[in-house]
Image 1 (cartoon, helix red, strand yellow):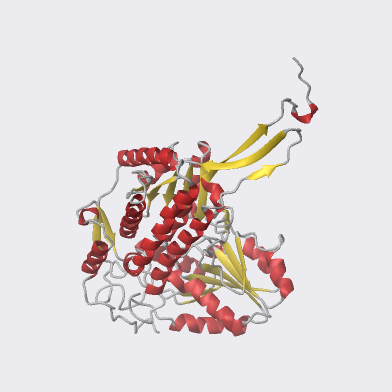
Image 2: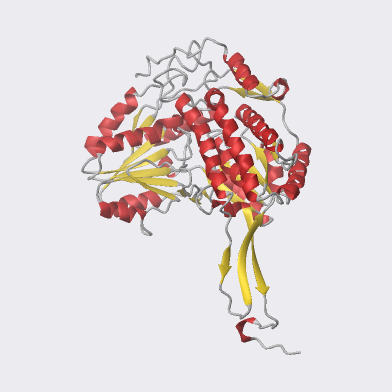
Length: 526
């Protein structure tokens, strides 16, 4: 589809603000929670206001943390399988609300409907995963050098878990953390992105219904177990600095991580940081090019290039460059950009003007370096006067940038649909370029050569937390070890041992003899 002939047929004739209100009412959110407040909410689809949310103050945040801490003191004593029952009910409530919550994600974050529904399905899946873990919070029996002794490792609830989430996954991030934190015996305080507060309000209402059902069979879910704080950066700072929050999960930009990480470290708190990723893929001479083309297109253009796992750099072997890249450019020129609610649309709007300006700045820098830029312009008839969106809606054609060298903006993440393409000669060269940025979230290789695949996944290969073969740089697979390395963070929000991030470990030594032998052969006779 060309930039001059976008699809503008909206999926609904209902005014967006009315549709959002209807959704929130069905989801159980009181009108007072999204009207008359000081935080304006705009849909990226049209740029129109769809809510005005009251904001928490730092004092409100401190009080919420206090309630959550009190809740933790009670919740930690509830058996883990019983805690898992609450998360099971949460999954049920999410299933019942999936269509409404998924549509709300579309309207507030601009995702196409399948991606909005997919995000809610991700919430459901992580609940299922966490329920299973609620019966697998295992410790170990450890061999001891002393006779008549047994030593064991035990795990205990940690405390209040703070969650700071970003706009690009406005609800799934909370579920990843909250589901695990709850089964581990922690309470949760959530500070969502100020760009997507409505989906947070809806999720909170859904969670409260699960709590109410849970308490019908026993009043063991205390008040304050799940707290929601809507506000600006100052609210997040309260979470970061409060000593009653021993573990904090933060999802967002690397700049945010650089601010959060040292402050957590200063008070010896745990950080689970999943920050943006300047992710790359390598296409080798043996690759299935049809598969690669589809995988690259989705990874680079899906969610308008605003996923943490978005493909941003592509290294193509020189022998296939002239075969693959023109085909990719054709896909870029024809992909349907428009109202995400319109059938057939694959690329919706950017979240706001700041995202658009950042994209244009990066493309200008590329042009100054002599790069060939395909696409990247604002789409006529969508944003601006007369289109589906007003002047505050920003629709762009995804950009394909052919670079002469791996340099300039390619070394730094731009949260927009820009794919930088660079030729390479040897796999070692491609892996070196993959690793030559600060980001370490996700990576991939397209190859049918087992040696190339194994090298890429080896210790001498990709240095990212995720290294995939014959699929793009995806990452949020349930049960997978989703998290970052290097500048993209640390800790794991999933994986078989992810629960350990939400618990504290103790070592217990039990002496069942009548003697007191000391370790390392020490003698101390009195």
